[in-house]
Every structure is written in structure tokens, then in C-alpha cells.
Image 1 (spheres, rainbow, N blue to C red):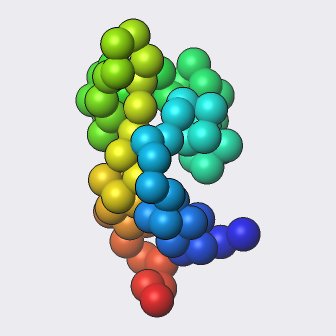
Image 2: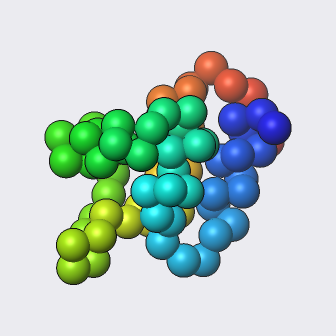
Length: 72
């Protein structure tokens, strides 16, 4: 699956993404996702003690991170 199709897949989600959803998309560990969220390196929000990701915001962040990819 290409990054562009991953971005489209993420954008299509209607509910907040969890750390376990984001880690494989980025190809990093769950612990690294938590660190990135805590450091503000990746857009996230908290629900009680859980870290969540808005699918639209996360998809836009991915597009910024990979600007050289052809867009559909």
C-alpha cells in the first residue's frame, strides 16, 4: 500500500485513531508514537488518559510530511 492510499484510508475514518492504529502507518513502535505525541511532533489529543488522533488532521500531517508524493 502506498503512502497516498494510506492517507486516503486515514481520511475516510470517522472515529478517532488510537496509538495502535497510528504506529503501523508510521512504521514505528507504540512507545515512539506516545513520545511523539507528548513532544508535540504529531497532532494528537487526549480523552481522559488516552491519546487519540483526529483522522483528518493526521491525514493532513502525513501529506505535509511527504510533500513529494503525487496527490490524487
